[in-house]
Length: 357
Image 1 (cartoon, rainbow, N blue to C red):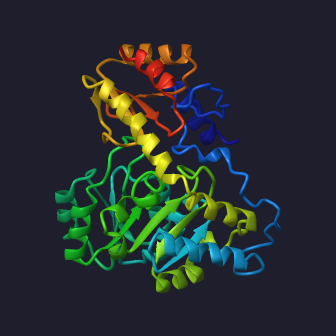
Image 2 (spheres, helix red, strand yellow):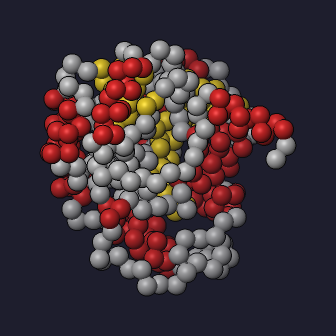
């Protein structure tokens, strides 16, 4: 490894931000994205099927894959759907292929890294706007040239807050911009039968593209772009992260379909919201950044010592989480991020609450 790479790693070691793989051995889960507990699997899922043989544009396509996409389009009330191996693949492939030279991408400053990498791979101009600030977006739209794409997330993973989708949608409509909404953390959790926030706000049929992923609430892997038939055809021809990758095996499509259309989604959503309410309602004096009904709850502390004491108390009870410190958050900010699930028990939540009292 050359000296420049060694220096970058040493820098991470020096400031305490070096990443390492670790095993999640916590006995109480307030950490994972398995919001509805579906990662534990189902006996109805079909695992006995052929493996993948190549790209879907070569030998890897199947009736199972196309049927799954048709069912997803019907479920999410989209003209069509295109499945990718991951949400990362979906975002970088979509953005890098549709935003051409002379176009403009406007993106929320808190947008996910996969979208940022898609922007870097495109030849378009890019401008960030202040987080969830429709006025700033409106001002930046006047600077945009060519075809204009606006990138937001319906539910942001770091702060657990939601985009003002209705007002953003209205601004994009007035300015003729193409709105792209990443629903990675919202699908399964919000909306009728888990169709997401855009669907719940009845905006879904007037959005250029929605991204849904199956590795969060659905507890599996993969993602889909919910798009028009014309855009699907375009992506089949120009989206490199779709074209130049091996397809998922058939059992993955079967599992995706069964998870999305799980008959007990509503009951799991209800249990999840009850658990979130119990936690929030018991800590009204704390400083929350997240939405009241978000499965991602973020609490801000006034001092690093207070945060450390809370994290240590959780560890003693078998609750694993990590502190969020500068430079990930602004200087002087100290936060803890918790994820709630439908399967968390009242006893587990009471143990968690004891760490804050």
